[in-house]
Length: 636
Image (cartoon, rainbow, N blue to C red; front, side):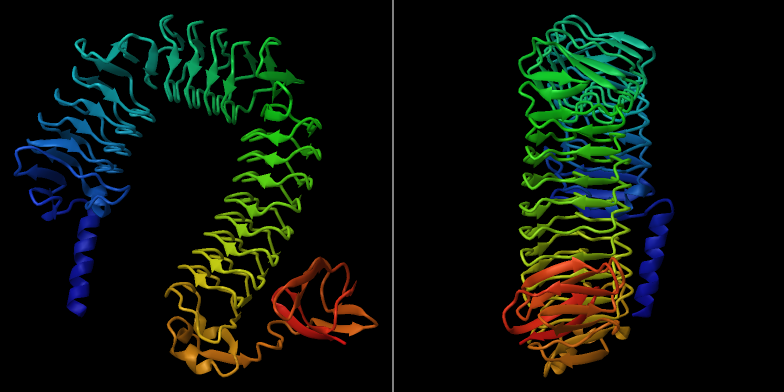
């Protein structure tokens, strides 16, 4: 056994160094691939055969892709499969056969060292993103038979100076290195490194295609009056573009059309425009105002801010406009990306607003607090992503989900109250909220999604009610300050690495009479031998024999019908004259009161070392919890 391990490690390190020798993969019964001395050769014994497509990152040579320096594809192979050579970053030479007809989706995506590619004459299709981020490509020749060039095929090719199309091609043409469709009504790509500072789009052009001018260093672009549509990301990161005149013929402006054009200062929307995609001007950090032609029937502007014509949707607040802002009471929807990257320090949301769109306040890095009125029922994903100064948020009562990335990377968010109707905490909802110290999940919550609290490195207390059924993978990963964990009896599924590297854990409490079957790695990185596992009376032997749970060495039984204190014993709770008295809490610590069945009855925050709260409750047993400490009280 030791010999096998030594040999395996030798092979891996040898392959990782520079080149791999003699590896063979059978792609089909008649097609094989051989990697030898840095050259990957693919051949077929069939008269004509297409290479298989691969899922992203699942080509058989993916683990050694960094050793591939050249690729040779033999005759009779008719296609390069989807994702075939994804991120072969050291690839410098490709030899394609004359039989080739199709270059698949992302076939050479990320081949950042590839400076030359010869596309065979028989090729008819170059699919989406085929040469995406081939950062060293300088020129490309498109042969005569190519009839389909997919979406963003040469996007992020930062060295590209020209694309040349065979004059006999019936679908495409080039003019001075710029790629167009055959009748020159669509401009497809202006190469990123093409020389010059100004460019006038030909008068024949009606459509500016997606990513047509991505990363261009042009300082001036003239758009003719014939253009009716500017598609998604057409001028993405044209950082030197200081001004642009939208033509009176324009009807549609796609999403992210002028994303991160950081030199733009103002935009005039002509009367002809009927649709502006969300994020069309996102991250335009100097953009201070919009002006809309009064005759436009779809949009209007007021004080430089872009709204729909009826002023019920705030579409875009210019990212270069600072200060404070009160949203007008006519507004019902805050659009996707409406305030993205805004320097505003204060935003007031009126009670008329029902929907906060996706990315609505993303990266508002000067925003310290915000109150969301109870009229809001939907908060879109990424709504407050990377609001790094945000300390407090008041959430509305009627939302049912905290969507994915809603508060991710809000590194100063210290506390938040989850409303009682929330059923799901979305993936990455509070990812990297490194100032969050405690969280109470109300009785409505049924699911905690992937990475929901991942890297909340100061989270010391999590209160989960007896309604939660699913805790997904990495939900609490890297919560290194979490010392005590109570998993409710209602939980039916815990996914891989849910509590990965929660290295501060000292106590874990479970209440299943029969141990829940869980993946091997839910406590990955945790030294469970030093953690006390609290289990129901009479079940220690079952847990000692159960996978994962048997890795604990310290067991403490308790009565599930009662409650025993765990963690810090300073907290005391008792009933006096119909009042709940909680002693031993520091100001700012959160507390919760549950029924014996796990229903959340009250929650609050201590404002002194003695907190009082009237208990309008019937007789019974109640559980007081604060930051992992639990105490049983009885109401007579």
